[in-house]
Length: 222
Image 1 (cartoon, rainbow, N blue to C red):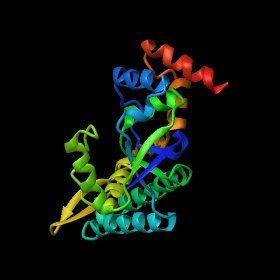
Image 2 (cartoon, helix red, strand yellow):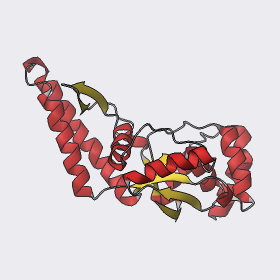
Image 3 (tube, helix red, strand yellow):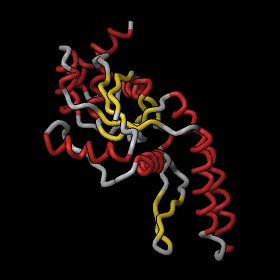
């Protein structure tokens, strides 16, 4: 496991554009602004795989999706359309991941607050499967707030993040886990925290009682 100091443009957030609790962001923000960002538990990230490996993963999932319809010829045209749309979706994801290679696993509110406060993002990068066990021990000791994933491998963390970002769905066949694709992905909102916060500020998506935080953020951009 590695400790990192990341910038908002390096951290990729999932397609949950407006899902945050303003009061929680405010709590972190005011402490970050006073220089206490290192006092919070670190956010948790995993680093993306090389682009070629992610392309291979996506294409494997598309083949699985197409195989599901082999005995349903009436679905073939629809599945072809879905797979073509999904290729455009995952290319969008790959472009975003190339610019922001660290996937956020836990710490959405802390990362939004640090971005608004122009504070460094103190992070723990999970590098090996054994690190997940160490994370669980840190939670038990009170060094971390929690770990909202019942997952035991780094690959599964990456895969679940990617599936969430691209609106893939999970199904089981013969007891094995497979992925399908949908037509209306949330990938349009998959971007760095720098871009996400900029968009929320520009589109006035933060509530009015966060005006002081928005003002602070804007002033420090000048």
